[in-house]
Length: 104
Image 1 (spheres, rainbow, N blue to C red):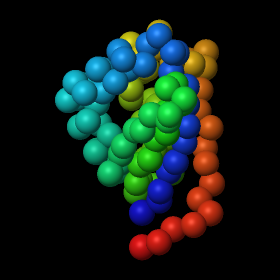
Image 2: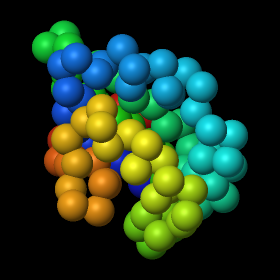
Image 3: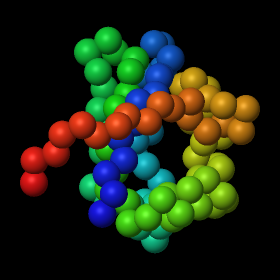
């Protein structure tokens, strides 16, 4: 299992809506993530109120990368784009973090 960790930014006035949408995440999105080998996926909000921290355990980098090409992911990104910093394709502007310690 590969542990993925990343950060991204929500707009300050949109954090509440971001949280609300994840509380009612689309069932099709959950199904697609699981079908692409994603487990133990969680998002956390930093004390600064806008930095989000993501953690996911994935089965493979190829499956993780393939998520971006699914129709449901494209729709999700488009719906979330007004709430956060994104790239031109509506994907979240994110920064990967490198693991430096792990206690099993």
